[in-house]
Image (cartoon, rainbow, N blue to C red; front, top):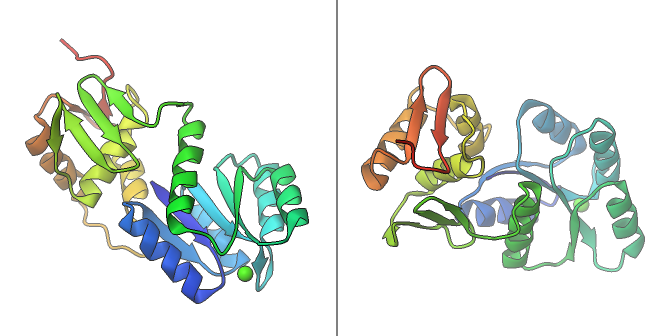
Length: 222
Ligand code: CA
């Protein structure tokens, strides 16, 4: 999942970016409202972690702007421990969840998974498509009951496809899901990951839709 972290405290921002990257996510991290607006305008994120006190404004103003503009990306607010007013205002402005500082990174990661699960209309944490099972919490993948070992990027590609079974996901959308904005992306990077996934999962799982992208079907095609 591609997550935008907006936090001006350098130690916290870098800790969040590193910790969430270790959980297998692709992270864009910014420190102020101006960069946050630019990141949100330029890229599709699966979730946003938003600090309230930022050097050039309030995270609550960003939240208000984005919701007024119809942006539905799940947003988790980071709030000061004893600021119930901020949490109430934030939730009423359209935040989906909050965590008071200091917080546990594992709890933040679990809350983000819950937000994205709800956002995609799933109640069940495990993704099951045919004989494929994907656990976003542990990043464990099984095919016909056999555990399959995937790299971080391979997992991200598979997850991007599995979150929308039967939909064609374009190469550009996969690139956006797995690479942050400061990362160099090779022109055939997605093809390379798909090729490796097929070597591990067999050729029947991920279908190429010529000129459009890739798809995982929820039912085996004949
Ligand atoms: Ca702050």
